[in-house]
Length: 74
Image (cartoon, rainbow, N blue to C red):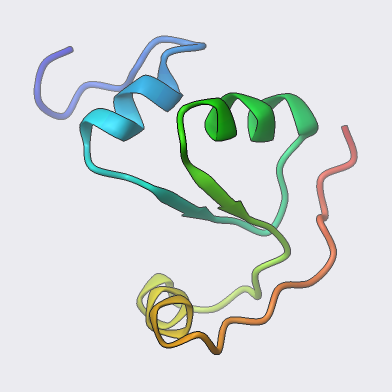
């Protein structure tokens, strides 16, 4: 993949690891996607509030991020 190109389906976990990602904060995610990310060592935080990404990251880093219900229905 070139710079700025999107990964092909199923390649996202490896691509995220290549980008230095070790945590994904999301409102919802299906169990298959969670498992794929976890198998690559990526922590998945579910049920995040709809706020600015910078705020979520700051809350995660300082230990104040509260998670809610996984809103994914599949």
